[in-house]
Length: 284
Image (cartoon, rainbow, N blue to C red; front, side, top):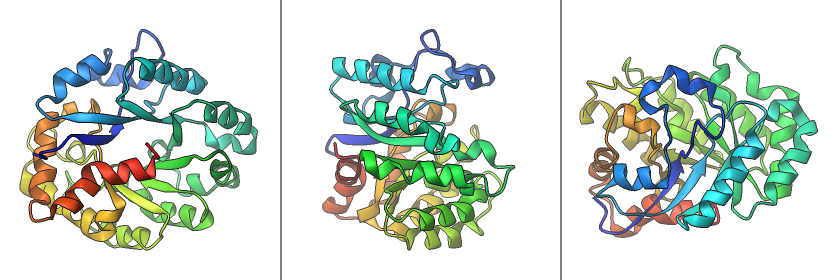
């Protein structure tokens, strides 16, 4: 385990009694409030002194309400250093007023729209309206979090190539098909994505792509190692994906997996992974 406090670049906070999250009804294990006090309890003994909140797919059209709620939550907990808000970018340039309003929040750092929800629609993220909205983000100092399944990496490469001025971060190493033992074309497409200099990769959400009850270190470690090797220590950031990660593992056990994979790395590279890159990318 790291001997220094980490920055977690991917944390979900929510209260279903405060805002509606329809998807949670299908995931009863985490269909309850998950607030900073719960994070403290369930992440111990790992020391976390900074987090980036990532949107929780709140029901449309409550994306601004969610971001504003997190901003108020952060006022009471200084560890919440940055916000990645949900935004219906498929609306195209018509969404600019919402982006501008969100960008006024002191901790606004990025935007996400769940491309993974459209895995059955090839080319969804390449539709002109979506691309046009993504291209607006640099104007407001915002990055874009890419949340996809492995079958969508090829489309993601095309999206990034169309938006060279946008800073992207790939969530959950592109959600490879770990449960089914799939490695290709994910491995080669990750190399192709890593060739684009405006993308970094979150080492997050890996064990939830394996069998939640029967995953092993030997099963998930090669995917983590490939992602770090492909992007390099200058372009990876640790993410806990809490509390979704609780479906498959304890927080400390996920940290232990990552720490074991990078056990041969020097102290500087470990700090890049666990702290420095998140601070730099999200301007924390």
